[in-house]
Image 1 (cartoon, rainbow, N blue to C red):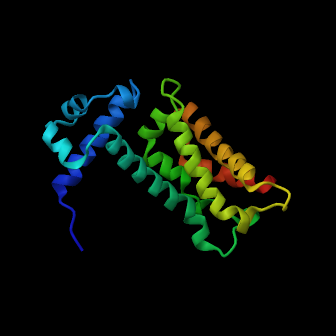
Image 2: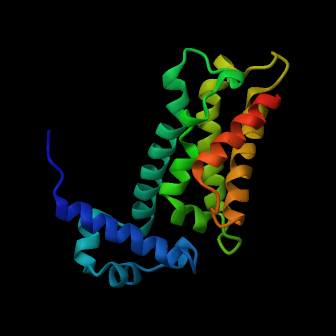
Length: 187
């Protein structure tokens, strides 16, 4: 097993933060490598050592977020064979803790100043996660198209996250967990 060099970790973290900082005010396509390097306090050579273009940096950060999102989404499934909303324990839900952890990223992609592209990337990932469990746990009846059901459920989850964002993430993640369980138990 290779041990990750702490310098590389810190450099990539600085580049991720610089990218987030710039994304608050402009779309990805309008950001230059020079701007990222200036904010991250690294030279262009260091940037090119790790990435060939800004899109690679964004993709790496997005993959990190999606991986954590997937792990968070799967957490309730680790405790049961089949997930039953009537028996779901709110403390097993981790998706809102994930959002809290990456709050600055979500502030950007949910902002009205940012192109919807970022939102749709997230929506597709949530739909992909949901499709993996729909047939096993939530298929209400065969006449319901699982793609429509996944889209509906993904937009419901993202709707809760958007409302939380609109409240400036005022509530605790545990409160959102409880709200989600109460909503799921209505169905």
